[in-house]
Picture 1 (tube, one colour):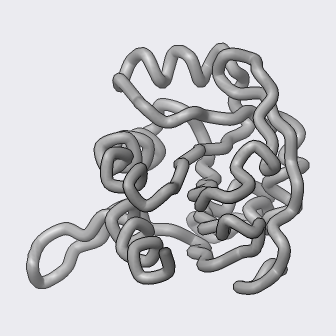
Picture 2 (picture 1 turned 180 degrees about the horizontal axis):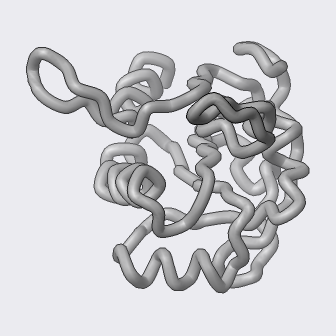
Length: 162
C-alpha cells in the first residue's frame, strides 16, 4: 500500500484521444491523479466537473489534474463532450495502474463483497513522490458551513505543499 513519501508507480496509458500519457510527462510539475469507477455516473460526474471547474486554480500551482478509470477512450470522449470537462481522462481497462496505486480492491456494498475501484486521489510531487493521498474519497460531503468538495480539499493541500 502506497504511503506519503513513496515513489509514484510509473504508468503509460491512453488518454481520451488515444494518445499515450506517462508519469514522466509531468516531471517537474505537481500531478493530481485521481481514480474513479465509471464515466457518466452521478458521483464520478460530480468529481470530474468539480476538478474541471477548479482546474484554473491548479495551474498557478504548477499542477496538472488527470482522471483514470477502466473506461475506453471512446467512452471518455463522450463523457468529456457531454459535461464539457477540461481535464484529461486516461483509460486503464485491465486496472493495472489502479492496482499499482492501491485503487483496486475488495469493496463492500449492501452486505456483498466484490472487487472494484476504490475512489482514490494521489498528489504526486514534481520529483515523482507521493506527497498526499486520499482513499475511499467522498466527492462531496456536508459540513456545518455547507458542502465540501473533494477537489477543493486537494487544491488546498497542494497550496500548502507547493
